[in-house]
Length: 159
Image 1 (cartoon, rainbow, N blue to C red):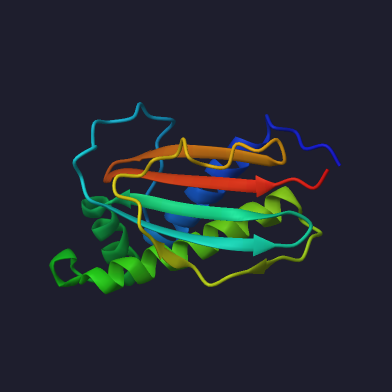
Image 2: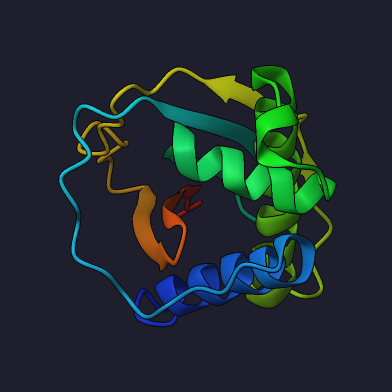
Protein backbone atom coordinates (compact mmCIF):
# COMPACT_ATOMS: atom_id res chain seq x y z
CA UNK A 1 0.00 0.00 0.00
CA UNK A 2 2.16 2.85 -1.25
CA UNK A 3 1.36 6.23 0.09
CA UNK A 4 1.48 9.25 -2.16
CA UNK A 5 3.58 11.74 -0.29
CA UNK A 6 2.51 14.59 -2.50
CA UNK A 7 -1.20 14.46 -1.65
CA UNK A 8 -0.52 14.10 2.04
CA UNK A 9 0.23 17.70 3.06
CA UNK A 10 -2.78 19.33 1.34
CA UNK A 11 -5.11 16.89 3.11
CA UNK A 12 -3.65 17.89 6.45
CA UNK A 13 -3.87 21.59 5.63
CA UNK A 14 -7.45 21.40 4.37
CA UNK A 15 -8.55 19.33 7.38
CA UNK A 16 -7.07 21.94 9.74
CA UNK A 17 -8.52 24.85 7.78
CA UNK A 18 -11.99 23.31 7.73
CA UNK A 19 -12.09 22.67 11.47
CA UNK A 20 -10.69 26.11 12.35
CA UNK A 21 -13.21 27.82 10.08
CA UNK A 22 -16.24 25.82 11.19
CA UNK A 23 -15.47 25.66 14.91
CA UNK A 24 -13.54 28.89 15.54
CA UNK A 25 -14.60 31.16 12.66
CA UNK A 26 -10.93 31.60 11.83
CA UNK A 27 -9.81 31.44 8.25
CA UNK A 28 -6.47 30.13 7.12
CA UNK A 29 -4.45 32.13 4.63
CA UNK A 30 -2.15 30.38 2.20
CA UNK A 31 1.20 29.03 3.33
CA UNK A 32 3.28 31.37 5.39
CA UNK A 33 6.90 32.04 6.03
CA UNK A 34 7.93 31.05 9.50
CA UNK A 35 7.76 34.19 11.64
CA UNK A 36 10.31 34.78 14.35
CA UNK A 37 8.36 33.55 17.36
CA UNK A 38 11.23 31.71 18.97
CA UNK A 39 10.74 33.53 22.24
CA UNK A 40 6.99 33.10 22.33
CA UNK A 41 5.42 30.63 24.71
CA UNK A 42 3.70 27.86 22.76
CA UNK A 43 0.79 25.65 23.66
CA UNK A 44 0.66 22.22 22.08
CA UNK A 45 -1.54 19.16 22.10
CA UNK A 46 -0.92 15.74 20.61
CA UNK A 47 -2.62 12.38 20.29
CA UNK A 48 -1.88 8.91 19.00
CA UNK A 49 -4.11 7.11 16.52
CA UNK A 50 -4.33 3.49 15.46
CA UNK A 51 -6.08 1.84 12.56
CA UNK A 52 -5.13 1.03 8.94
CA UNK A 53 -2.34 3.53 9.64
CA UNK A 54 -1.03 4.45 13.06
CA UNK A 55 0.87 7.47 14.18
CA UNK A 56 0.84 10.70 16.11
CA UNK A 57 -0.83 13.99 15.39
CA UNK A 58 -0.14 17.32 17.01
CA UNK A 59 -1.31 20.90 16.98
CA UNK A 60 0.45 23.89 18.45
CA UNK A 61 0.24 27.66 18.47
CA UNK A 62 1.83 30.59 20.27
CA UNK A 63 -0.06 31.30 23.49
CA UNK A 64 -1.60 34.54 22.22
CA UNK A 65 -2.95 32.86 19.10
CA UNK A 66 -4.16 29.87 21.11
CA UNK A 67 -6.05 32.23 23.41
CA UNK A 68 -7.89 33.85 20.47
CA UNK A 69 -8.70 30.42 19.04
CA UNK A 70 -10.06 29.29 22.42
CA UNK A 71 -12.15 32.42 22.90
CA UNK A 72 -13.69 32.00 19.42
CA UNK A 73 -14.31 28.29 19.99
CA UNK A 74 -15.98 28.89 23.36
CA UNK A 75 -17.74 32.09 22.31
CA UNK A 76 -16.29 33.94 25.26
CA UNK A 77 -14.34 37.12 25.71
CA UNK A 78 -10.61 36.64 25.41
CA UNK A 79 -9.91 38.21 28.78
CA UNK A 80 -12.05 35.56 30.47
CA UNK A 81 -10.22 32.58 29.00
CA UNK A 82 -7.99 30.74 31.46
CA UNK A 83 -5.00 28.50 30.59
CA UNK A 84 -6.85 25.25 31.23
CA UNK A 85 -9.57 26.29 28.76
CA UNK A 86 -6.90 27.04 26.15
CA UNK A 87 -5.46 23.56 26.64
CA UNK A 88 -8.91 21.93 26.48
CA UNK A 89 -9.76 23.71 23.24
CA UNK A 90 -6.43 22.83 21.61
CA UNK A 91 -6.87 19.19 22.64
CA UNK A 92 -10.40 19.15 21.23
CA UNK A 93 -9.23 20.76 17.98
CA UNK A 94 -6.38 18.25 17.69
CA UNK A 95 -8.95 15.48 17.98
CA UNK A 96 -11.25 17.03 15.37
CA UNK A 97 -8.51 17.91 12.87
CA UNK A 98 -6.91 14.48 13.17
CA UNK A 99 -10.31 12.85 12.64
CA UNK A 100 -11.00 15.07 9.65
CA UNK A 101 -7.59 14.27 8.15
CA UNK A 102 -8.02 10.53 8.63
CA UNK A 103 -11.46 10.52 7.02
CA UNK A 104 -10.00 12.27 3.95
CA UNK A 105 -6.90 10.14 3.89
CA UNK A 106 -8.39 6.70 4.43
CA UNK A 107 -12.16 7.11 4.35
CA UNK A 108 -12.97 3.43 4.84
CA UNK A 109 -10.65 2.95 7.77
CA UNK A 110 -11.75 2.79 11.38
CA UNK A 111 -9.41 4.58 13.73
CA UNK A 112 -8.98 4.63 17.45
CA UNK A 113 -7.78 8.02 18.69
CA UNK A 114 -6.20 8.32 22.09
CA UNK A 115 -7.36 11.23 24.25
CA UNK A 116 -5.27 14.30 23.34
CA UNK A 117 -2.71 15.37 25.89
CA UNK A 118 -0.80 18.56 26.47
CA UNK A 119 2.49 18.42 24.63
CA UNK A 120 5.41 20.20 26.23
CA UNK A 121 6.94 21.89 23.22
CA UNK A 122 8.39 25.22 24.04
CA UNK A 123 9.55 26.25 21.57
CA UNK A 124 8.52 23.43 19.26
CA UNK A 125 11.29 21.57 17.54
CA UNK A 126 10.18 19.40 14.70
CA UNK A 127 13.47 18.11 13.40
CA UNK A 128 13.29 15.50 16.14
CA UNK A 129 10.25 13.88 14.52
CA UNK A 130 10.90 10.26 13.81
CA UNK A 131 13.11 9.91 10.77
CA UNK A 132 12.82 6.14 10.39
CA UNK A 133 12.10 4.97 6.86
CA UNK A 134 8.91 3.42 8.22
CA UNK A 135 7.53 6.81 9.17
CA UNK A 136 6.23 9.69 7.14
CA UNK A 137 6.41 13.01 8.93
CA UNK A 138 5.02 16.34 7.92
CA UNK A 139 4.60 19.67 9.61
CA UNK A 140 2.41 22.41 8.16
CA UNK A 141 2.41 25.98 9.37
CA UNK A 142 -0.90 27.75 8.78
CA UNK A 143 -1.09 31.52 8.62
CA UNK A 144 -4.14 33.04 10.33
CA UNK A 145 -5.06 36.67 10.79
CA UNK A 146 -4.67 35.88 14.47
CA UNK A 147 -1.18 34.39 14.17
CA UNK A 148 0.04 30.95 13.19
CA UNK A 149 -0.91 27.40 13.97
CA UNK A 150 1.24 24.37 13.29
CA UNK A 151 -0.14 20.93 12.63
CA UNK A 152 2.14 17.93 12.38
CA UNK A 153 1.71 14.30 11.70
CA UNK A 154 3.99 11.34 12.10
CA UNK A 155 2.57 8.39 10.23
CA UNK A 156 3.94 4.91 10.78
CA UNK A 157 3.88 3.02 7.52
CA UNK A 158 3.75 -0.73 7.74
CA UNK A 159 5.98 -2.13 5.06
